[in-house]
Amino acid sequence: MEKAQALVRDKVKLAESLAQEELLKLQTQLQIFQADIDRETKIVDEEIEDANDELELSLEETKRIRALVELEEEENRRAKAELDDYFREQEARVESIIKETADIQALIDAKRAEIARLEEELKLRKQQELDTWDSLKNTLKKHLRDLSEWKEPEENYPSDRFAKKMGGEIQNLSAEDQIDFMRKTAEAENTALAKMWESLHGK
Image 1 (cartoon, rainbow, N blue to C red):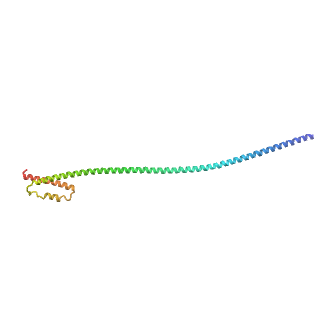
Image 2 (image 1 turned 120 degrees about the vertical axis):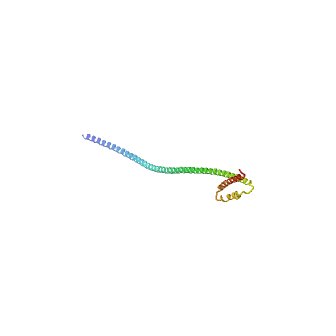
Image 3 (image 1 turned 30 degrees about the vertical axis):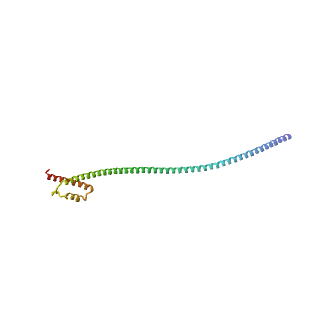
Protein backbone atom coordinates (compact mmCIF):
# COMPACT_ATOMS: atom_id res chain seq x y z
CA MET A 1 0.00 0.00 0.00
CA GLU A 2 2.73 2.35 0.90
CA LYS A 3 4.56 1.41 -2.31
CA ALA A 4 1.47 2.24 -4.29
CA GLN A 5 1.08 5.56 -2.57
CA ALA A 6 4.74 6.33 -3.11
CA LEU A 7 4.41 5.44 -6.78
CA VAL A 8 1.43 7.75 -7.07
CA ARG A 9 3.31 10.53 -5.34
CA ASP A 10 6.23 10.08 -7.70
CA LYS A 11 3.95 10.20 -10.71
CA VAL A 12 2.26 13.33 -9.35
CA LYS A 13 5.64 14.96 -8.76
CA LEU A 14 6.73 13.95 -12.22
CA ALA A 15 3.52 15.34 -13.68
CA GLU A 16 3.92 18.53 -11.65
CA SER A 17 7.53 18.76 -12.80
CA LEU A 18 6.53 18.24 -16.40
CA ALA A 19 3.71 20.74 -16.08
CA GLN A 20 6.08 23.20 -14.47
CA GLU A 21 8.57 22.81 -17.31
CA GLU A 22 5.79 23.13 -19.88
CA LEU A 23 4.52 26.22 -18.10
CA LEU A 24 8.01 27.67 -18.10
CA LYS A 25 8.32 26.93 -21.81
CA LEU A 26 4.95 28.52 -22.47
CA GLN A 27 5.89 31.54 -20.39
CA THR A 28 9.19 31.81 -22.25
CA GLN A 29 7.45 31.52 -25.60
CA LEU A 30 4.85 34.02 -24.45
CA GLN A 31 7.58 36.47 -23.43
CA ILE A 32 9.32 35.98 -26.75
CA PHE A 33 6.01 36.43 -28.59
CA GLN A 34 5.20 39.51 -26.50
CA ALA A 35 8.64 40.92 -27.24
CA ASP A 36 8.07 40.25 -30.94
CA ILE A 37 4.66 41.91 -30.71
CA ASP A 38 6.13 44.90 -28.87
CA ARG A 39 8.92 45.20 -31.44
CA GLU A 40 6.51 44.90 -34.37
CA THR A 41 4.12 47.30 -32.67
CA LYS A 42 6.95 49.80 -32.19
CA ILE A 43 7.96 49.42 -35.81
CA VAL A 44 4.36 49.84 -36.94
CA ASP A 45 3.93 52.85 -34.65
CA GLU A 46 7.13 54.38 -36.03
CA GLU A 47 5.95 53.68 -39.56
CA ILE A 48 2.56 55.15 -38.75
CA GLU A 49 4.26 58.18 -37.21
CA ASP A 50 6.50 58.54 -40.25
CA ALA A 51 3.47 58.13 -42.49
CA ASN A 52 1.60 60.75 -40.49
CA ASP A 53 4.59 63.09 -40.75
CA GLU A 54 4.76 62.49 -44.50
CA LEU A 55 1.02 62.95 -44.75
CA GLU A 56 1.22 66.19 -42.81
CA LEU A 57 4.07 67.36 -45.01
CA SER A 58 2.10 66.28 -48.06
CA LEU A 59 -0.94 68.17 -46.79
CA GLU A 60 1.17 71.27 -46.14
CA GLU A 61 2.72 70.97 -49.61
CA THR A 62 -0.74 70.46 -51.08
CA LYS A 63 -1.98 73.56 -49.29
CA ARG A 64 1.06 75.52 -50.46
CA ILE A 65 0.63 74.32 -54.04
CA ARG A 66 -3.10 75.03 -53.91
CA ALA A 67 -2.40 78.54 -52.58
CA LEU A 68 0.14 79.08 -55.38
CA VAL A 69 -2.34 77.77 -57.95
CA GLU A 70 -5.08 80.00 -56.60
CA LEU A 71 -2.68 82.97 -56.60
CA GLU A 72 -1.62 82.19 -60.17
CA GLU A 73 -5.25 81.80 -61.22
CA GLU A 74 -6.08 85.15 -59.59
CA GLU A 75 -3.13 86.77 -61.35
CA ASN A 76 -4.23 85.17 -64.62
CA ARG A 77 -7.78 86.44 -64.12
CA ARG A 78 -6.47 89.92 -63.31
CA ALA A 79 -4.09 89.84 -66.26
CA LYS A 80 -6.90 88.62 -68.54
CA ALA A 81 -9.19 91.38 -67.28
CA GLU A 82 -6.47 93.97 -67.85
CA LEU A 83 -5.78 92.52 -71.30
CA ASP A 84 -9.50 92.58 -72.12
CA ASP A 85 -9.70 96.20 -70.96
CA TYR A 86 -6.64 97.05 -73.06
CA PHE A 87 -8.12 95.40 -76.15
CA ARG A 88 -11.44 97.18 -75.60
CA GLU A 89 -9.63 100.48 -75.24
CA GLN A 90 -7.61 99.79 -78.40
CA GLU A 91 -10.74 98.77 -80.32
CA ALA A 92 -12.50 101.95 -79.17
CA ARG A 93 -9.43 103.98 -80.13
CA VAL A 94 -9.27 102.34 -83.56
CA GLU A 95 -12.98 102.98 -84.10
CA SER A 96 -12.49 106.60 -83.00
CA ILE A 97 -9.51 106.98 -85.37
CA ILE A 98 -11.51 105.41 -88.20
CA LYS A 99 -14.39 107.80 -87.53
CA GLU A 100 -12.05 110.79 -87.26
CA THR A 101 -10.34 109.70 -90.47
CA ALA A 102 -13.70 109.37 -92.22
CA ASP A 103 -14.74 112.81 -90.92
CA ILE A 104 -11.44 114.31 -92.06
CA GLN A 105 -11.77 112.61 -95.45
CA ALA A 106 -15.32 113.92 -95.77
CA LEU A 107 -14.08 117.40 -94.86
CA ILE A 108 -11.24 117.09 -97.39
CA ASP A 109 -13.70 115.93 -100.06
CA ALA A 110 -16.01 118.83 -99.22
CA LYS A 111 -13.08 121.27 -99.37
CA ARG A 112 -11.97 119.80 -102.69
CA ALA A 113 -15.50 120.13 -104.05
CA GLU A 114 -15.65 123.71 -102.75
CA ILE A 115 -12.26 124.48 -104.31
CA ALA A 116 -13.36 122.91 -107.61
CA ARG A 117 -16.58 124.97 -107.47
CA LEU A 118 -14.66 128.15 -106.69
CA GLU A 119 -12.15 127.41 -109.43
CA GLU A 120 -14.98 126.84 -111.89
CA GLU A 121 -16.70 130.00 -110.68
CA LEU A 122 -13.43 131.94 -110.97
CA LYS A 123 -12.87 130.53 -114.43
CA LEU A 124 -16.39 131.54 -115.45
CA ARG A 125 -15.98 134.97 -113.89
CA LYS A 126 -12.66 135.48 -115.69
CA GLN A 127 -14.29 134.45 -118.93
CA GLN A 128 -17.16 136.84 -118.22
CA GLU A 129 -14.64 139.60 -117.49
CA LEU A 130 -12.82 138.80 -120.73
CA ASP A 131 -16.11 138.81 -122.60
CA THR A 132 -17.07 142.08 -120.90
CA TRP A 133 -13.72 143.63 -121.72
CA ASP A 134 -13.99 142.42 -125.29
CA SER A 135 -17.51 143.85 -125.53
CA LEU A 136 -16.37 147.10 -123.95
CA LYS A 137 -13.34 147.28 -126.22
CA ASN A 138 -15.44 146.64 -129.32
CA THR A 139 -18.06 149.14 -128.17
CA LEU A 140 -15.44 151.80 -127.47
CA LYS A 141 -13.77 151.07 -130.78
CA LYS A 142 -17.12 151.47 -132.53
CA HIS A 143 -17.77 154.62 -130.52
CA LEU A 144 -14.40 156.04 -131.51
CA ARG A 145 -15.01 155.08 -135.09
CA ASP A 146 -18.38 156.80 -135.03
CA LEU A 147 -16.87 159.87 -133.43
CA SER A 148 -14.12 160.00 -136.03
CA GLU A 149 -16.72 160.30 -138.73
CA TRP A 150 -17.98 163.61 -137.32
CA LYS A 151 -16.41 166.51 -139.16
CA GLU A 152 -17.82 169.27 -137.01
CA PRO A 153 -19.03 169.49 -133.36
CA GLU A 154 -22.72 168.75 -133.02
CA GLU A 155 -24.62 171.06 -130.68
CA ASN A 156 -27.13 168.34 -129.74
CA TYR A 157 -24.29 166.07 -128.59
CA PRO A 158 -21.90 167.85 -126.19
CA SER A 159 -18.36 166.54 -126.48
CA ASP A 160 -17.95 165.95 -122.72
CA ARG A 161 -21.21 163.99 -122.22
CA PHE A 162 -19.57 160.58 -122.43
CA ALA A 163 -16.64 161.61 -120.25
CA LYS A 164 -18.94 162.90 -117.49
CA LYS A 165 -20.86 159.63 -117.43
CA MET A 166 -17.65 157.66 -117.25
CA GLY A 167 -16.29 159.82 -114.42
CA GLY A 168 -18.91 160.58 -111.78
CA GLU A 169 -21.71 158.01 -111.91
CA ILE A 170 -19.70 154.80 -111.38
CA GLN A 171 -17.31 155.70 -108.53
CA ASN A 172 -19.27 153.73 -105.88
CA LEU A 173 -19.74 150.62 -108.04
CA SER A 174 -17.68 147.45 -107.99
CA ALA A 175 -15.16 146.80 -110.73
CA GLU A 176 -17.48 144.31 -112.42
CA ASP A 177 -20.43 146.70 -112.17
CA GLN A 178 -18.27 149.56 -113.43
CA ILE A 179 -17.30 147.51 -116.49
CA ASP A 180 -20.94 146.57 -117.10
CA PHE A 181 -22.00 150.19 -116.62
CA MET A 182 -19.39 151.41 -119.08
CA ARG A 183 -20.44 148.79 -121.57
CA LYS A 184 -24.10 149.75 -121.31
CA THR A 185 -23.29 153.47 -121.34
CA ALA A 186 -21.09 153.07 -124.41
CA GLU A 187 -23.81 151.07 -126.14
CA ALA A 188 -26.34 153.83 -125.26
CA GLU A 189 -23.96 156.42 -126.59
CA ASN A 190 -23.53 154.43 -129.77
CA THR A 191 -27.28 154.22 -130.13
CA ALA A 192 -27.59 157.99 -129.63
CA LEU A 193 -24.81 158.63 -132.11
CA ALA A 194 -26.41 156.31 -134.62
CA LYS A 195 -29.72 158.09 -134.29
CA MET A 196 -28.02 161.48 -134.67
CA TRP A 197 -26.10 160.20 -137.65
CA GLU A 198 -29.30 158.99 -139.24
CA SER A 199 -31.05 162.29 -138.53
CA LEU A 200 -28.20 164.23 -140.01
CA HIS A 201 -27.86 162.07 -143.08
CA GLY A 202 -31.52 161.48 -143.57
CA LYS A 203 -31.46 157.73 -142.92
